[in-house]
Length: 305
Image (tube, rainbow, N blue to C red; front, side, top):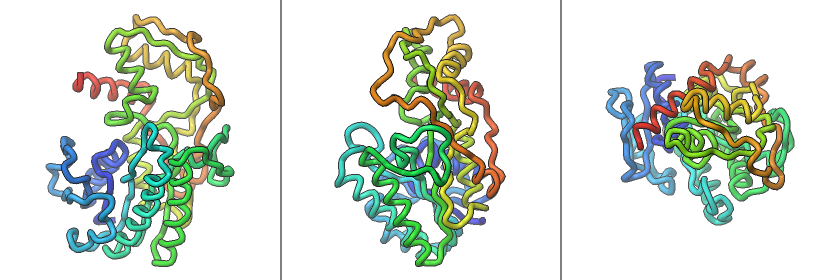
């Protein structure tokens, strides 16, 4: 791989991927939403070229990029949080934009398309999630991710591109969703706030964003055509253990309200990525412990406070 295209380039996982690509000496065409802040240090690298392209204009962006590329990574997506996740028309647009991304990849001479799917494609499934775990999404976001993965695979194969799709579990780190449990807990601990939780008996699977970036790099290099890879650490722990680890790293003297909240309806009690296929095909193994990832996340949040 000598040149890669990355959409949604300022997002958490996309940014982590770009850092890996630059470390590997790969030239990056970073497609950014017009007007979006670009504070990441990698934007000053001579290997990174930022191009303003709205997600709705991907299909016609080849002329603006104007160079041949090898691997296309697609992260850009609208309506990832809140009520917009069930906005059927908006999520349907995301499916079309994913197909536009495949079209652009082909126009740029790419030989591989790697898409960012979601755990939401599985719906209420629990246990070790494999490429063959049945999918039954219950949100518009999950339905759209599943459709985007399947339709982009068909389109890519028709155009002669290798197609790889990742179903991402709980990735955390700087620039992630501030309302998700890791950054929200870290922020409350930093602010000295009381933190209330359920008993934390769930077995969950958290992966630091830099490890996710490494996984995507390897998928572009070695991922099998047509493969679907669940992406997590593959090493689940009790949620209560994760919470205690966050306390120990961020505010060792803080008290934790474990058991103060009831479990929400239909709470998933075990979610873990089975990395067997991803490891066999690409050699991926997480490098960063949860504790180290929390430390890096806390350092970033302190800078924002």
